[in-house]
Each structure stands twice: as structure tokens, then as C-alpha cells.
Image 1 (cartoon, rainbow, N blue to C red):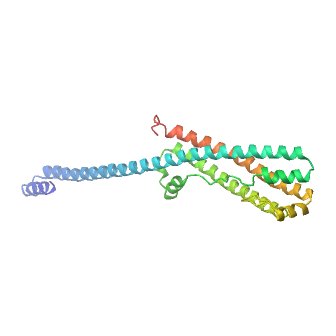
Image 2 (tube, one colour):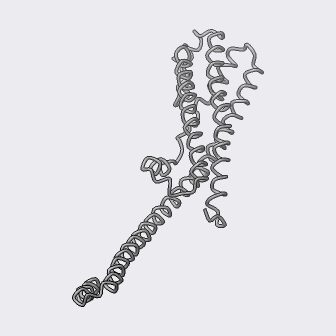
Image 3 (cartoon, one colour):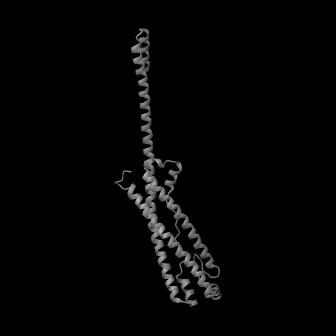
Length: 247
């Protein structure tokens, strides 16, 4: 097409028809500009299709992460609530015994539960991966903001969870020093009977109180955190990933 215009221009110049030459020159320029614009538009379409595909993958993976979190949080909350109730019942039994050392030892050996359900963290690899790659701009600003707030809260939950679980295990280890309590299995026998006999009730009380307090604090701090995390996660799923949502 361009060579066609060029031949016409050359012919017009040879015929000394300047006005028509200029018109054809302008036409040739316009043709080139239009071609460039079409090429740019096609490139934009291709880029948009590429971004749409990335966006779809991100939203699909993110939705799965959020759904996995809601299921995990629900199960973990139920476990922790049960453990907290068991601890409260154990505390009531201790208070009923009073200063009866033998009864207290029997209660520890039969009713004390040294185990605790730790929080293993959130499924936020998809969000962090896209955030680190700078691709969050592919989603709406509202969703970006809500995900940022959720992730910031998750960081706090994971930090405090680790802090209180470490504190708990340090207390359970300290509990074992003067008292024969195995964190994996409560064992009874002549050796442990002798150790119990040599341990005064004041030591038992102090260690037991320290252990129970650290365990109760774990439930007191972590359970509200997990409930909030579950609520925030559910809200994002309903707002951006329900069938009716077009965001």
C-alpha cells in the first residue's frame, strides 16, 4: 500500500501537480499513523487478555486459600474452646481438693492434660506472592485494601500465637523439673511415687498455677484473634467471591 502511494507521488511530481502530491503525502502519513494505532490497540488487547488470565488465576487461588482458612480456623477454634473448657473443669477440681496432697497428685496424674493445640498459620502464599511481584494492581483497590488489612492482622496473630505457645511450653518444661509429669505420657510407678513424695505441696501448687495460667492465657489471647480472623476472611469471601460479585 505504501509503495502504491509512493508511485503516485512520483508520478504527480513528474507532472508538476504539487497540490495532489501533498494530499497523497498526507494520506500516506495518515495510513502509517493508523497502522501504528491499530498495532498498539492489538497489543493492548493482547496485554489485557494476558492480565485477565493472570487475574483469574490469582482470584481462583486466593479464593481457595481463604476457603481453606475458614475451614481450618473453624476446626481450630472448636478444639481450643474444648481445651479451654477442660482446663476450667480441671481448675474446679483442684479447688475442691484444697490442700490434700495425695488427692492433688492423683488428679494431676489422671486429669491433667499437658497437650495444647498450636496455631499453624494462615494460607496466605497466594497474596504474598502477588504482593511481592507487584501484581496486586490487577485487582480492585477495595480488594487490595481489604487483603492488606487481613494480611496485617494475620501477621499479628501468628506473632502472638508463637509467643504464647513458646511461653506455655517453657512453663510445662519447668513444671516437669521437680514433678514427674511427662509431656507425652503421664506415667506412674515406684520412681515417680518417690519423686512425688519428696515434693512438697507448695512446689506443686506454684508449678501447677504457672502452667495453668500460661495455658489459660494462650486460650484467652488466641481464641478472640482466631474468631476475628475467621470473621474477616468470611467477609472478604462474601464481598468479593460470591456468585453475585463481579469485582
